[in-house]
Amino acid sequence: MSSAAPSAAPSSSGLIVRPVEDAADRTAFVDLAFALNKGDPNWVPPLKTEVHGLLDPRTNPWFGHAEARLFLAERDGRLVGRISAQVDQLVLEHMGAGTGQWGMFEAADAEAAAALIHRAEAWLRGRDMTRSLGPFSLSIWDEPGLLVKGFDHPPTVMMGHNKAAYEAWVEAAGYEGVKDLFTYDLLVADGFPPIVNRIVANGEKNPRIRIRKVDKSRFDEEAAIILDILNDAWADNWGFIPLTDAEKAYGGKKLKPIVFDDLIRVAEVDGAPVAFMMTLPDLNEYIRDFGGRLFPFNWAKLLWRLKRARFDTMRVPLMGVVKRLQSSRLASQLAFMMIEYIRRDGVARYGARRAEIGWILDDNEGMKAIADAIESKVNRIYRIYEKPL
Image 1 (cartoon, rainbow, N blue to C red):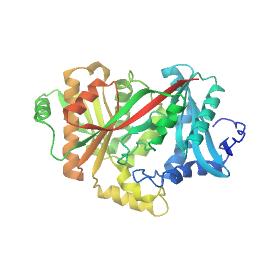
Image 2: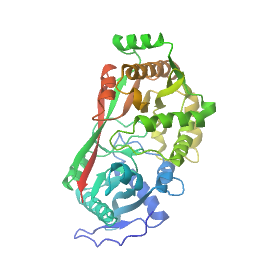
Image 3: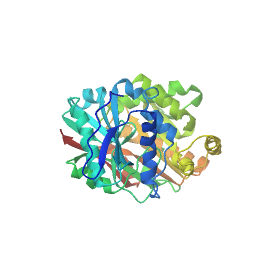
Image 4: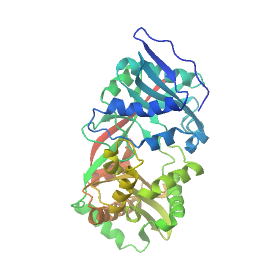
């Protein structure tokens, strides 16, 4: 992380915003989310070890191309908020020079929110940023966007949850929405509409098409295939930032213990991989009662739950078709085939009743059409905001 910034002078109410300086501050930064959200029945406590790993340059390869500064808001000796500010060289390359970001946002009240956002903006200006985007905690591959719809149910794995009041507080700081991210909810036990089943059946008759499970015994090789498709398929999407080789390895290592062979499919055409769909069990179902603590006893409990492999909900965080096939009938056919094959195994082998697809960009008409065709409904909306600096 960057060098220390000077502490802010206290406001008339005794509020100060100060930089995180040491291990005790970082622990307080992580723990504050638990204190501010403990009364929300739909907030799922993240594993603290995962959050610490995300924020640590020694473990998170994102810091190989980015820097971040963490801030805490304090009033009369009590912590009342937190925020990160970050500058990512790959964001500058792919989203435009001068584009800074902020995230990891939590606040107890409007005054703390305003002071935190103001401090993050000042840090970004100090690094010659002219545009502020947020929230990103820390990157678009982590937890992007502020929840603005869907507060009445808990998020699935790798998705965020925040207080409804945050929307007004962010907009009061002068931010306007630039992009919405949708998640779609659907019941999977009873299958899909007849038209989808016909498309899948026709694909099964095509000898050029093969929909296969991943081979977890060759996980590194399979992960490389999937991520190569991802980088090609998503290259033109708003906000896309390519994963570095180090980030691919880091992500693969984190995902390997929680992936199931039959819930990740690769579509091949004429023997070449051209599409994939990754589905994960909703890990939040497994860890919700952990209170953020994995050790010393919850680690064994998590392993047992994963081995038992029964879950109510699964999530599709990633799906892609190579660019040369996008907008073709074949692309949608491959998507429907992968969705149906995973649905069958998810229901039969793991007892899944529902699935969540997303996030999906608000202008991704192809994926929105697929979501509509399988009769899924938007259940949560996350908004990314921008402001000129």
